[in-house]
Length: 558
Ligand SMILES: Cc1cc2nc3c(=O)[nH]c(=O)nc-3n(C[C@H](O)[C@H](O)[C@H](O)COP(=O)(O)OP(=O)(O)OC[C@H]3O[C@@H](n4cnc5c(N)ncnc54)[C@H](O)[C@@H]3O)c2cc1C
Image (cartoon, rainbow, N blue to C red; front, side, top):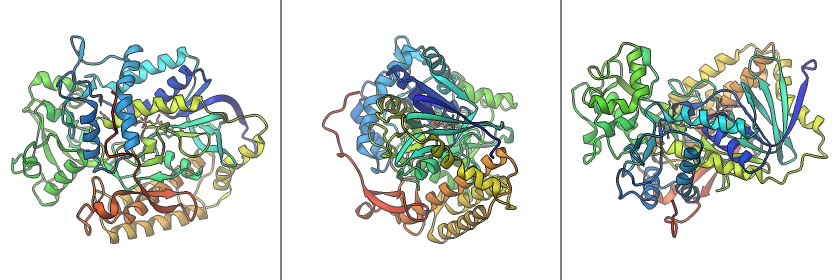
């Protein structure tokens, strides 16, 4: 360790994360006049964003901010933080205007935006681009950030936040696959490092998102909320095998696609009699599909059919990127239908924030999937992207206003504290390989805290995770800096898996993405409150905290 030098740079705002939340934060902070360092490993889940919800009423004039607000609460099983929902609803239109102003293209009908109907939404309200909005938005935001002097560190991963007493004053970065460490000293740090990542077997997350957000924030003293709510994307491709993990967009149901079981039944009408595949949030749809499969009405490979053959070819073109991917593997969606089943896909929980994206820890902001609270117990299709576009901007503007000073701190001691866990890994003499620990976590979580949970499974999952923690404490097999960083990742994954399992054990009811087989009912009397993991105790203290905000705001702009 001693021969690796730690270089340092100084900035007003450090943004961690190169997805949409991170890019929006970097652009907003620079726009507010702050100097910005933007560091990230790769592009995260945002590269897959197809569209996001804005209640413009261009496709259906009945849509308005109030209807969206109510949809979000209904879709979130009313566990949403109302103040955050209000900020989301009010921030979506200005975010769209800002994207248009920097040249992000959208599908249009003349001057109006084309808007797609996504599951759980009363009206068509997703603005989109047929080639996928995520990469197009990131491309334009990247140009914008460069033009405004943002210093970009692509391929760098934060391995620890820099802590001085109760304050966060930057982060320690590691250049991926190179023995280089960089300490970024910052008056404010925005954590936009995404969600739980591939912490579940069969997940749709890209490899660069690794549950770091929650572990780093909690270690810094932030409270985590709603960790039990893991969204399983209902329709993830299993067949054709070459496209395994590809998400078939629920937006295609608005174009006429249908779900059928092995008996040929359009089974969603049994669960959602009036609307079938439409107007049902994703968590519920995932449970319906799983029930069909578990009760023996699926195909032999444990799937149901996502029937694209009934969609008019010109409507399929609205999903060019998915269709292109299927065709590139020789699969023709106008004549054959993919086989799908649910897989872990996103997370409703995260760092508890206020409407300014402050984490409660001085100097630390969180945005996007790193933060929790806005979606409640389940997320409406298209709202994950609305969240990152809106709260990324809010976090960047808030961070630019930070009044923490950098002068007069003992930086050598701060660096030393940040590097201590790495040193401990390198000095250890354990046997277990970090990658083996990661594989074990993925299996344990899917088995114990998957779509359906119960006390026995969760307790046994927690025991197995505790055993892994013990193994990590005895030391992992890490011979160089690269392997030591992987060991820290494995440790973070176990830490976060324990947060999920402990929160799931605490909530003794079924709501949205959290289904306890021995408590099958939603229990508003006891559980209209959120499970929080506050700092302190062994791996955090489990608490129950009240919901914030009024059932309906007095007025909504949008
Ligand atoms: C396949 C797929 C399709 C989706 N489609 C849609 C959709 O159409 N509409 C919708 O609303 N939602 C969609 N979602 C959900 C949505 O993509 C995510 O909720 C959203 O992109 C999260 O954005 P983010 O900026 O918070 O995080 P991400 O986009 O995941 O970005 C996280 C960033 O942090 C970086 N990072 C992670 N750890 C570190 C670290 N320690 N140090 C430095 N950098 C780090 C990553 O490299 C990445 O740059 C989809 C998700 C997936 C997986």
